[in-house]
Length: 220
Length: 214
Image 1 (cartoon, rainbow over the protein chains, first blue to last red):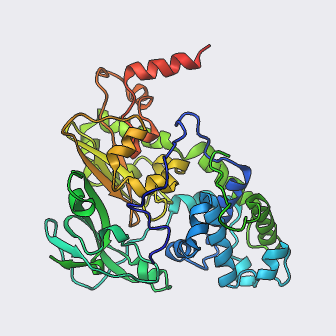
Image 2 (image 1 turned 90 degrees about the horizontal axis):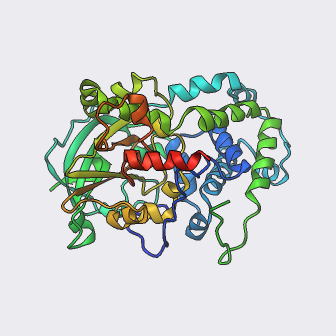
């Protein structure tokens, strides 16, 4: 979707003001730590995947998305998912108190502290085979399709319709646009380079590399 | 908090600290979340998994040509062989800074970042201005970090739009011949592995260490 999260090339957002590396703490408030931990542990209940959770954050009103701090956006996304998947009810969220018990099969999935290291070390690999033929080879010229999907996509606006060159082939990976709708499908994934002057106008001599799934592209 | 925002153009949301507390107690009451598991996650990213992991990878690449070659051709194999596996590091690609090529990493769509080797991302990496301008004006972004590049240096920006996570292999600073990997690791900053700064020079490292000792 063309949401506020799709930020590449936006103007007027002010300076970055980075905190010096040696001075920046990992977290800036106690609640940020709990928001991170809750997002991960609730995710391990298996009721959504990474693209569903990204889409939950992206769907916020642009003013809200851009006004929120980072972990506020995580919190908003988590609240949306928990309610949409029926894990909690809006009334329970409002009160912070349980009204109905959780189903036993969900409680079984609650990760104890002793399982955390193994879960983090295992991660969640995203490669997934496909029977589709590989359409592009390194060096091929492509054009990104022009589209404006209202659902989740990982093709940012700033490269749509533009010409690029395939610079790497990663294999077949879960296709996010479908994954966000709960459909786990493998699709070929590439790295594609774009000339700065093509994307941003003359005088920009940088190269921009973007990872793109096969169906985002046509031969140029 | 260094990143409070003004909410004068929208209704003020309720205090996130209260919301998080209420949500945690609700999920704990329902038996869906173990608060000790949250503690374990926090401790992991505050004390165990951070940019010192990446510094070990880079220092080894600077001193071991075979490892460097594996790191650039099969980053997964090289990095996983050092034990840095797992969440947000399942699929890795390393891009090398050279005398003619500088690399910079961003995620314009969210905040994708190689947790296994760099830990959790800093606030600026997740901020809207960085995400907006890293792809369209990388030179301006680098200038905000006080980073200058020699004339003619090519810049590549890597936008993390898939589950591939990018790590920059910074250039080894001059006058470090004969340094051990442990000594070299001190020169390797988190920011140099994102590509917004260079690795520290020996002079800068000495200045930092001098400022720490009273």
